[in-house]
Image 1 (cartoon, one colour):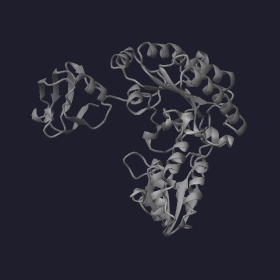
Image 2 (tube, one colour):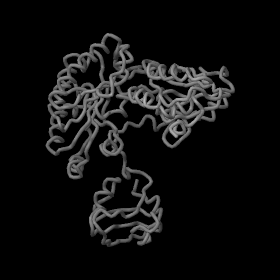
Image 3 (cartoon, rainbow, N blue to C red):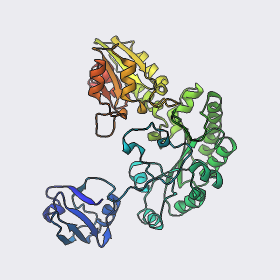
Image 4 (cartoon, rainbow, N blue to C red):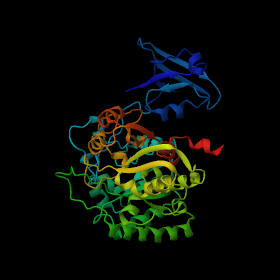
Length: 440
């Protein structure tokens, strides 16, 4: 792979230097450009020498004088130009190892790349970093990073990750703290393995690294039905979910007094499994791990509350069906109930069972087209159904199993309305109007 130029901004420095799409950026001041971070870091200087390879093989050495931090005007076709750093672990709970066979090859790729952690919030384990990688993290101050910790006990973490490097976690966190690198940490909770006293010690140990460690997110282990020859793991049941909630509530109270923040946060699934209402927004502080499913339900409910007093009392007749996974029911049901109080609205929640993965997989984002088509059948022919765009692969109209929105519409006879996951978008789809119009 190489730093292939995808586009050059008209009138930019690069444009004036006759750099074109299809050229390859080789080096800046003799530093190889392996990713977008290298490009941004080395190109900010006011005097640089850039090597460009043209499509015909010619190498151009270009001296550039500019103001510090002036952008060159180059757009690349990716953010990682060399090979993505793949995972070297054999985690006992790895979701990729639980995928059905004969799916797209890209679904089986396990990334553990610190650059994607900084750029996109992917969680990494730190077990595959070279000395050069560490130097880059510290010299470029790649902060924050997102780190999968799971536990701080060296032998147990190595066992959970299936990698001897897992034992270095305290040393690694200390190194990041000394470099003033902020981190958000994750614990995938596996009952009987890293819960109980282990969990208490892990939370306490991570909190000692504050303010380097900014948050501790706890998510339940996800288990599919495709675990042949994999270690036996238990799910989070109602009783264990309640025990964990009680523990985290106690720790939050302590950290709010000590640090001014809750520090440790639970994924929405714990409250769903426990049958307990979602915490208020204060619990989540600034929602540091919302992309990890921590606080999504509360955000949706609060967004709806903000616009609910602006809802009309009547709309033109609109019958609509909202598709979701089991885990979204408790957040969506009160919203749909209130929307149904509007004259002309007939909204119904359709909970789709995840037969594709089975196990305890109930999140909406992992629903597949085949399950939606099979469970809807032709019963809703001619009706509107609402699907969240989180089901779709990035920049595509296809779901995880490559079934498209058009396929769903064709096989079920429905019209699909896509929402962006926000309460406003959901209300717009159900009412058939734009809620912005209600504010005028």
